[in-house]
Image 1: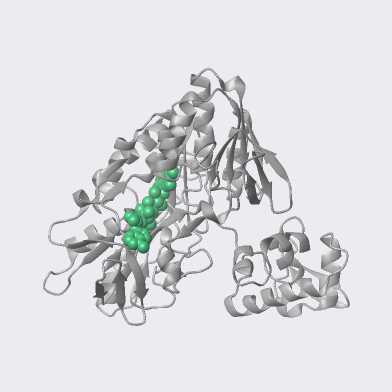
Image 2 (image 1 turned 180 degrees about the vertical axis):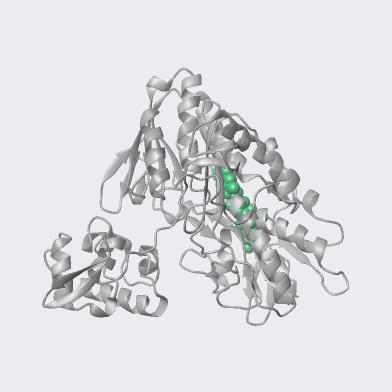
Length: 105
Length: 405
Ligand SMILES: Cc1cc2nc3c(=O)[nH]c(=O)nc-3n(C[C@H](O)[C@H](O)[C@H](O)COP(=O)(O)OP(=O)(O)OC[C@H]3O[C@@H](n4cnc5c(N)ncnc54)[C@H](O)[C@@H]3O)c2cc1C
C-alpha cells in the first residue's frame, strides 16, 4: 500500500499500482495512468468501456470480466484487446481506478 | 431435490439419505445420463494407462435404495416458484434444492476449434470421447509439435493440463520418440499455475522436462487449415497436434433459468454454499462461481459443510458451517512419481508432510513415488468411499500443521 500525488490529488494504491478507492478517480488521473500503461491518449470509446466497468464495480464490488463485457454487448473481446493492448482485464481496471480483477483458479 | 448425480450430487444424496427421517423428507435426484464417469481417469486414457471401461460405472450402483431417481434432462429451474421442469414433461416442486449440475467444456465458444479438424489433430481430454480419440491418435503418431492450450480460466481440475504434459513427456520417452516431439504449454496465466509458490515449482518441472512454457496467451481463434492458434492480440503459435482445454461453463439450464453469471456458474456464498439469490437453493461442486478449485476433492470438502448447513436450514437455524476453500490435489508428474498440493482460499500450496504432520506418508510440493500411489489410489477411494458419502481420513478444513511456511 502506498499513496501518490497525481494530477494535484492524493490517491491510494496497492503495491501493483491499482487504486484502492475508486471514488478518488477522475479523467486527469486516467490520462496519466493510461500513458504509464503505454496508451497515448484515451478516446471516447475507452471512456465508454471504463464508465461501464465503474458502474458494474459500484454495484457488484468487482470489475466485470472480458467475457461479460462481450456478452452484454459493451465491447467485443477483439476490440477490447485493441483498446487496452496486453492484458485488457487488468489494464482497463487499473486505468479506470478499480482494484485488480480477481484471478481464478 | 438434487439436480445432477455426478460427484457432488451423489455424495449429497448418500449423506442426506442416511440422516433424514423418511416420515418428514422425500429426496429426489435427477440426471440425464445413467453412466457415472470417473473424470480424473480421463487424464490416463490418452496414454493407454486406463481404458474407457476403467472409468465408468452405472450411476445406480451409488444410489441408496428407496430414493426417487429420475433419469431425464432438466429443462428449466424456476427458483421463484420452487419448481423444476424436466425434459420428460414432468414438473416437480421442492422445499430445498441442491444444484450440482457441474461444469463442462464448450469448444464451440472458440472460433475455428470445432471445424473440420476437431478430433482429427485437435483433441480435448476433458470428455470421454476426446480422451479416447486422442488415445487412438497418439498410438500411431510419429512426432512433431504438440501444443497443450488452455483457452481461458477458470477450468475444472486446474492441474490436469500440467499433468497431461508431464505424462506426455514420460510417454513419448517410453515410445522412444521424445526427441521427435516438441511440447509447448500455452496458458493465459502469468505462469505454470495460479498460486505463486506452486507456479514457480511447476515452472521448474516444465523446464527440467524440456517443455516450453508460453504464459499470458489468450486464445482468440484457431486456424485448423494453417495449424495455428491465434491470440486476441494476433500472436500466432503453430502446432501439429493441438490438445486443448476448451472454455469451461456451467450447464445451459442455468443460463435458461437466469441463475448464472456469464459462464453459467451460479453466484454462491463462498462460506455457506447457499445461492446468493434464493434462500432455499444450495450449490455444490463445479456449478458454483466460487474462487476455489473445481475438483472432486473440493466437492467432497464442500459436501461436509453443505450437509451441516442444509440440516440447519431445514430446522430454520442459522447456517454455521463455513467452507474455507480447501483443495487437495495429487498431481501425476510422470515416470511413476507425483506431487501433492493442499491449499484453501487464504493459504497457497506450501511444502511439508500430509496428512500426518512430519510423518506423511505424502509429501507436499515435492515429487515422490508415494504421491503417485496416492493418485492411483484415489480411484478406489472415489468409487468406494467418496461417492458413497463415507468419511475420508482428511479433515474438510485445511490444516496448517505439517506445512512449512
Ligand atoms: C480430465 C479431468 C481430470 C480431473 N482430475 C481430477 C483430480 O485428479 N482430482 C479431483 O479431485 N478432481 C479432478 N477432476 C474434477 C472432478 O472430476 C470434478 O470437479 C467433479 O466431478 C465435479 O463434480 P460435480 O458433481 O460438480 O459435477 P459432475 O460430476 O460433472 O456432475 C454433474 C452432473 O449433472 C448432470 N447434469 C448437468 N446438466 C444437466 C441437465 N441439464 N439435465 C440433467 N442432468 C444434468 C450431468 O449429467 C452430470 O452427471 C478432473 C476432471 C477432469 C475433466
